[in-house]
Figure 1 (cartoon, rainbow, N blue to C red):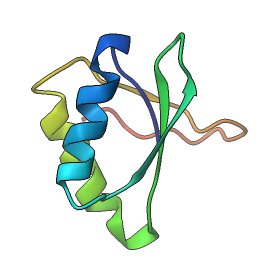
Figure 2 (cartoon, rainbow, N blue to C red):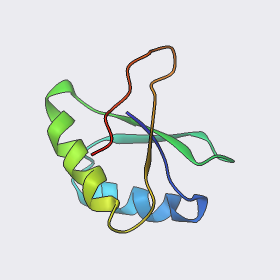
Figure 3 (tube, rainbow, N blue to C red):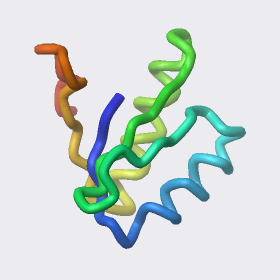
Length: 76
């Protein structure tokens, strides 16, 4: 899953993700655009989606298409 958040929120997002028992591995793929890849086990998709939705209450979260794929997550 790829998302974009405000650059100033990267550390906070990582802190919150770690607080969820490292639900996903976070990788910043573009530090200037604050584009982040969340890697997780296939069975964790719903939990990661729930986490991202909760984070949308704290900051602007933009879903990004997966590079090399025409598939993109639907915006809730």
